[in-house]
Image 1 (spheres, rainbow, N blue to C red):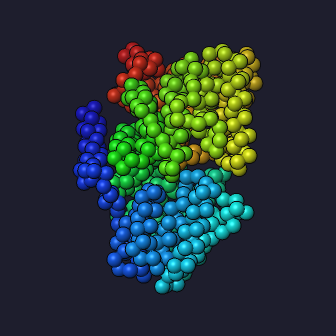
Image 2 (cartoon, helix red, strand yellow):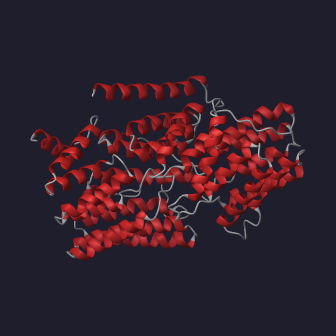
Image 3 (cartoon, rainbow, N blue to C red):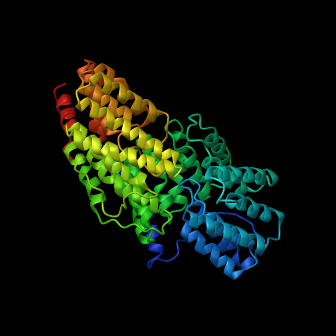
Length: 537
């Protein structure tokens, strides 16, 4: 107990020091300075080279607005610096977030054309400019993935042509990760990119992009351990960047290291407020809510999403902010199994209905459908399921196949519980297995710490409800292999083992649950039962 508390306090101090460092250096919303080390030689005027390197460092931490301002300042100081306009073009392509808007594409293409007309003194720089121009070419005729693949191929050729250019390798690795097929569960692109980056990391241990992209390459259940070192180093490399402070929590979440995730996102939230980055702040909050809920720190979770929330459409992280605003109350209700509360959820202020980001509001309707089905309000459940189907059609028409599939899975889950509410037990179980298998074939998007509730965990819940604990146990254990230290999966596994008469396994899971929730501030019945079971053992 003492060792655990000491470790937690030590980690908290580390992150508080990092946050304080970022705050102390810039008393009045000044320019962030601690962004890592980037060595990107260019032939532009000697007086702008340092600022160009700073701009690239910002780009590597996905601080797109700040990077664009820095590249524009370089272009103003040296109008003949084509690479400055290359940088501006790069800030309009957000490889791991979402396809650029028509406005971003237009501005990116204009910047790429300016880069060409401004010129470059070296063939290497001309190749960089040509590569980014490939992404924007015919954007009004070619779909996003076709252009992303063309850019990846251009970067592959560039890094092959200049084998000593580490930046070329780094940007090629990011392009590889960005074009990884969502359906590829062998992670060919991710592993190839990760191998390139790991080699560079030994040579350039203070490079922000290398640490950052390693995390993204290995942000999967079976790969996450490979990124733990990079995760624990990235925040120290670029402590002024809200995104760099947040990104480690992607890996901490995958590995169930909730306290480290909490500390990471508290630091990110503070830095985002300091540098007026609302999307980053909301993104950190969603991960905070998720982590707090896994430790049954329900009051802390409530505090996070009950605090005033503001988003800004011009922010490149606008979509992440929207997703967070809608997902936090949904998580809070369903993770605590407060089904009446979930059924009564309304769309929060700040989330516009429908439109390009329809998939963000779907989480509210999914929670509502689940809550209604679990409380027997079949009419409300059907209405919410109908909304999900309508949203899915809107998203499909917009060409977003990933989120359309996620909404399809949500509809399958909610339908299974509605069927159960109708008394059709066998049919409900069959439908729930379809949803769980479907979700297993997909991966989570980087915008989210996890789905609102895992389908396979809900399959375990249904089996328990139908008095089939022996069948429920392996479903919960499958969830825990993919998502270690999930509160509800541990609690479900413990209860299933207890009801199946597997006493030692039940004891192990209940012990794990109690240990996980040493700082709990909520009144979870599962936790009360765990303590009672252990006290009577």
